[in-house]
Length: 388
Image (cartoon, rainbow, N blue to C red):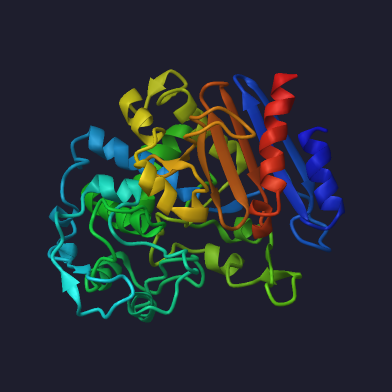
């Protein structure tokens, strides 16, 4: 079975209204647009359809962070409170589920590298359940920080957001454990301060313009925003796919108050492929070096200990973490160790396999795509097609 046949079957079964896939090896690039942008809709998926890429924002931010490191504006080992004084003196909860005033001193400051590897000591809690009703979780929610799912968005600008975040104790000691998402939110504020301009302008100048990524950004012109596919996810009570309207075109047709480095970008498969190709080509685009080989190596190499991989739980599923993205550390049903990439919660996913020179990208806006087996099928068939 081919990627097209498998994904078209899922569209015909009503799992997805539509999907755009890209599989590339070297100069051989195959793009396939199937179905429509909404159930019951008549707007076809196209090669240039723009998608909310959610957490695929994270590796993009990591790459730009490494550009600033190469320029000497940041250092991986430096405490983040040099540029984020709001975080100076943060203490650590004595017990993650305990009262907020029961804290101990941090063993060391949080560093830039801690943000990139998600070991700053703060992030989403996934076990025993997502965001349990513990004091730290409830306080973060009350502050309007939006530390998990990106919508509805936070109403706070970056300065106010980081001030509020700095009033919280850390959940764990810096460097101790991998926890999801918050690292990229803090990193986005840090990168903007290091560069002296808004995060969207930094990404545009350092990455999007050099790569020709014109449709990639934190917002779209109103006419393009209206073309965004509808977002669906299964309601756990009814077990039916339901459209989610809190991330509609009106949300994306103007610059956000808080540009989220964790999940705030939109892009197309071809434009994201340009970014993926930059990493696969070890930092070179069209003969011009934009990122050093060393930076790409750090991004795409597991930085976690075996115990940290284990305690990361279902989010990493046994994979490791580099800078802003997952890295496989064992042979699986798809490939040998070293495949890297990530997925976005609206139903977007990407991987690079540097051993095979292979890139796979699948963009839809049905969150269930990530956990119904469809993503794994896409990955496995991407390898199978290119090995024929």
